[in-house]
Image (cartoon, rainbow over all chains, first blue to last red; front, side):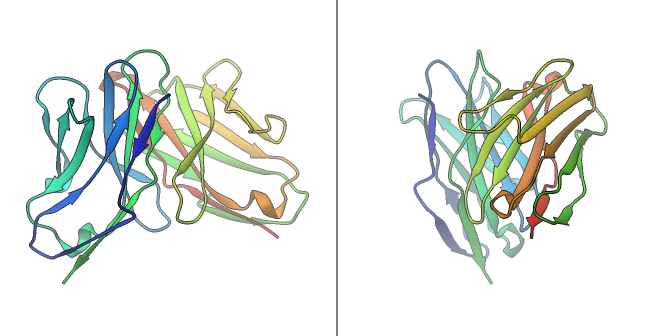
Length: 114
Length: 116
């Protein structure tokens, strides 16, 4: 069965410091991995994805994520956090073949402190 | 590009009435759209996969007669909550799969449904 784990309900980081939001996954076959951000009462905004190729993926707003196959992880990172990055972040996975359905993690609330 | 809209953004209705929510892909065609439900401070729960020109595929536990889905064109899917009850109150989010961009789903802004 496919699953996604986001082990931290909330991450606090000071503005200007690097941030990491963790995600691990379980899927049969090759994974497609995604990160989305959600602001209050809004839908999800696409940040970045890993399909194939370079393990380090760069996305919107200065975010990046590294695909680590051996650790089955896809952690989201940013070198210098902004207060405006405070939001709810979701990791999602789907199999490379077969169903198009995503499996979402439970979300991690990021709070960037001024 | 890859913009998905939803209408209405919020709706309040009386118990027993039906509510229709529209999901549109504005600048791309989507043969597949998805409908999710999100409870406060929780993740997204996939309700159904909407396929253009054919019947929707519902997830286990989702009542197909209560949540009617129609995907009549490549840019429009609708979700109708029939005979709504207070327990149907939720945030409903649709997404559309853009086939040209490696299977990325783009999400609408969501619809807040409150059933009194």
